[in-house]
Length: 387
Image 1 (tube, rainbow, N blue to C red):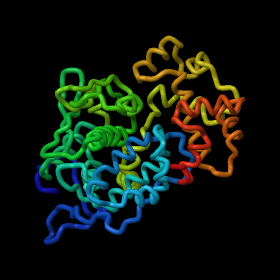
Image 2: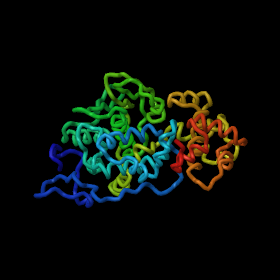
Image 3: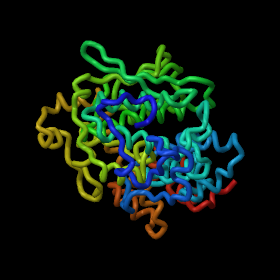
Image 4: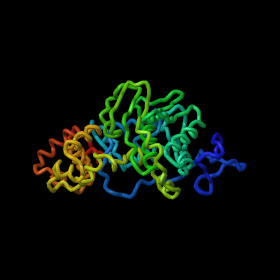
């Protein structure tokens, strides 16, 4: 058992179940954190077309600590398949695959899962060790409590603490010491990782009722709507996520083989690929699909397929901080960005693929989405953007 974990706790760890985690010396019942992934080659998920994109803000924010510490961030970008030129475009976006790969490159190069943004170094493998400890927990409440106990072993502490009220539960950020996080990326990441890890463990998205932040609404605050899918409160007295406490009794349904597979690409994938399967946004995206060359289904048909009324569906989408039109627009935008990365496709063909009968209309829409024309965006992807 790790020191600080009481005997008889529901979550137990056996090194034999995790042979890739080196045992501590002298028979001590813990695991070595330093060098856990030393020399490990990170690979993303299977090469499939990603229909999700990530704002360039998060790319630049993630690189902030590495830049401050003198790392070659341009080389990191290239290793992740991202053209540094692309980031010169005001509203550029990268694929979720590229962003996930960038996170892996950062952790591997820096040996710090806090990416130089935290009050201390979090050696690579800390997250995996925590996951190895919580996989045998019986339910979500036990997961969050044990994860917090694990995080308390490191000073200064960076963690989320579970608070339970009469009707709801709250994960509250506990961050000690001085952090170097001017773009709020570390704080955003902690919230997202703890929320999505819990959702993955119980096999269902934990529906958030509220997300609170103890800082003013940032310039990229609009992105939060698509990250948290719930009401947002800035300049609060805490950083926290609130949800119905019924989720705490949900059983952990994952096993060790699933966790070992999960850890090959996490927590990078938790940051870049939200599980929207249980949101109306995600269900509508799935119903629309990726073939925009055919007429899209109308709102009434979508509502019928989801076994709800149009009025109820509009209300639920509003609760998720979006609308049917926005879902369609963002799908088109993300698909257009994907197709532009395929250099063999003529831009006029891409316009047709994303549902525009007139190339000029596509050009105007794309410039509204990204600030530049499709041609200029492609040049940024190629690294040929003029000065």
